[in-house]
Image (cartoon, rainbow, N blue to C red):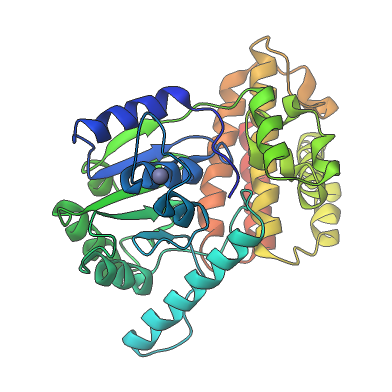
Length: 361
Ligand SMILES: [Zn+2]
């Protein structure tokens, strides 16, 4: 796992709470994608389990090394996973445990932020597994730390009230020896009932130097390092995303925006063509495109407010002076992003989104 970079104020606050034994048992870490929310959660796990903690975890004791190697028996990192195939509830839990073990294996191999597949979620099986593990005595004798990454991907209450309720019950009365750290890009996407039980910690964007430092410490590919950190908008994920998949995502987003804005008067033929040409081999690529779309619109909104955009904007967006319309457009993309987590046809979703955007832009 690469070193935690930046977020010094948040670290100090957390270290102080740990020292005075006043750390909230349920924390929600909120911040832009790729700024290191899950990495900070791991840092907190180190701090809680370190044999000689100070303002920072020592980094040398067995506990610190186990956390960093993602093998500590009391650190349970839940990332969104694909829905289990088994029909039997116990088998589903086993399947979820295997999927999580595999996800950890992948994270050990490549330590940097990887945006999860758009279809992945925290389903009932994951929540059951979480509850089982929460009931165990900590192996280290100290505490258990649960990290629930992208907690907004907890399956919506309507589709699985059991999953949401089971998690709620756990967070309502967390076992005294457990700390839960949920991460999300937007606290509003969490169930209000979950949000109300948690203390929110906000992380800001990283500086250009900090992003470069993360990429260096993770031994990121030379190609990624050549990306000017400024273009990443304070996010390591975005810096990496300007590589292969990300580059294509931004190209597709630009194509889509241009088609929408040009075709406003008549049939958006160019957009139809753009949609047909994009195969969306993986859900991850599709959601990366939606993220790129939101990011581009965000950039245009900043430009409309007189700020310097981080990337070259599509011509049609360069001279916009109405940030409100752009922000409404970002909201529509966020809705589509949420819908994309469900079982929908990307082409259909994009067509609807295209109409929505043409309307608000
Ligand atoms: Zn230590």
